[in-house]
Image (cartoon, rainbow, N blue to C red; front, side, top):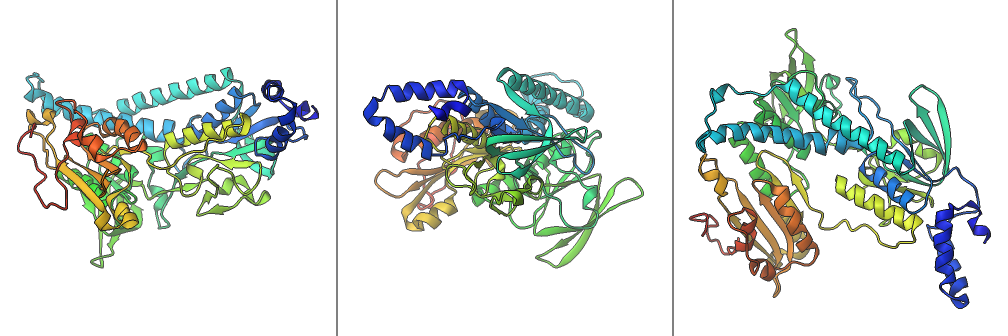
Length: 530
């Protein structure tokens, strides 16, 4: 029983009950297996059973789940201000400068569009062409919501007995963390287990004048209207920001170094970009920035270079937004003190989120080679806590994770891109069902249906297992979320096409896919019910 000397009593009681129910014959076998695993507690005494570095989605989920399973937990979180001084409260990227404010501003843009559409449905809106957004009021509304979430998060940690430390954590040794507090003092904390969940921050280009630009860390609290904006980068962050800025009435230009939406199905990515061009968003393809200068008129002169035509050009903008990728916050952790292995600013872990150091783990955007998505971090964090403190063996499944790009015409997908499926299985073994469609709600205001498109990537076998579903159109995330469970469960085209759709919805279009790319037939429907 000496094993329990350093255990939280709640954990000890659970294990005692489990052991005594086994019978004497299996007791020794249990202790041999249990104490050799990562869930074991050493006889050393530490201040905490778990210290979590990072107060974002993954770290908070892990911390709270650990407490549920009897652990004593401390969670450290500290936001280093951006070059222009932006900082925020607990909750991580998603809550403060990511998913939540992005979706709210996307919604603001959609509402503006809907106001003008309402006239065609019979709503009388005086001087509708004069309607424009108030950037300051929008920012204030978004920030008020974020601050309310910050507060609720703090209260939730207190209620769940997670000790919150507003300090920048770094390693002293594998069981000791130094927290640099806001007042400049230092506090040392010791823990049996350490989980790194510090996430990442936007990159800045290494060019003259880079510090004159902002990133998504600044945009959602910007104290002035962005005006004419150059968005450098064509990943999902860049396209989303350019999309809602354009929807709010600001001139937006996207600078593309190589391809649009790297990592996504490229046919769908190019359709998203074409739909944005149709709405008035400009794209500078194969172009990189060279220098940013402040002009005397308060604007910024950006000189840039087209790598395909070998031509240099320039233009003036009110705002330059860097969206060229994100880097993991490994430099601030003093990982050299513990020899945790890293790769390209990220931490290397195995399939159980374990680093090469026995008691140190990592979850979320900081780990190498995993989807950088909030729900992924949350689920992985919870499962990790259960493995450490509840004897669970369930690991995170990173396959078939659904996601959405909140571009003006949204794009959502789950599973494999078409090119990835062909690369893995061979072109002759892949069947792609596809079709354009016409959302009913687009008819009356005569909105363009040119880019409303979806496809199913399947194996060309008897059961035609679905490898990936892709959809561009209204409320894309809501559409794909339900299908994601089906794909996870082994959806086949036979099952999909035998499913009766809900009419008239856009989601039902998946149940009506009958034309394959291989057939060469026109995938454009004649009517909404064809």
